[in-house]
Length: 108
Length: 217
Image (tube, rainbow over all chains, first blue to last red; front, side, top):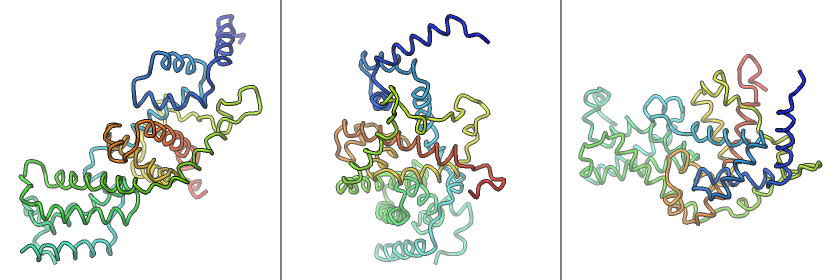
């Protein structure tokens, strides 16, 4: 299908902006900073414009957001602990038990 | 040895003996610590310290919170202390060196040098797709990839990321624990995100993980 005039104009605007805005490499620290502190007005505008022109960076922003959500612990109950499959090794278990027993008998 | 009756659930609820606590919550606390400090021996030591601290502070446990919450609280402090100690001897060579690899992601031979190149541009994770594999992440499986990817970061940077994103500490708290400036902290968070996003993409989304014989690759 023939792309319309609106599409071609948008493309030209994107190219025009992309040539003048800081490159992705410079923008990335700002995308992270946006999650840490309020951006200045200038930073906000540059971010908005860059993201408008750049699909890769839009993905980047969405994915670091997702990353943040994915690493959050669910309510850390027994179930999630079991899922983690991290268990004390028998050696560590014995060692800690011995240390505890020693401490208990010292206390009593 | 603990008395054989200790396994009784009802009795367990009333447990006030650190040895019984250990039976009940030892593995849980270990998993909790392991997830954060990422090193089994350190996690074991922290669990042991937690129970010893709990033992000498039994009087402070007023039963307001569950024993588990109380113990987890003690462990949490131990973990942050440990991060603080570890931060005092940071591996600076690694912290400097690691950042140089960053430039490769934006090297291009065309007029768009400084922008993502084809090999490193973020791939489509299907994050806007409701049928995306992200929606039913297998917690354990993702956790393994995440831990693996954290190991690729300088220790202190990974610690900062864990405190920020796993535990939700504020930047002020994290800078206090690690004794770093806030600018340093922002840089760390940026490189952690850059590295982790990429590493997770390579190991989780791109690597075949759908079983069916492909998983062996």
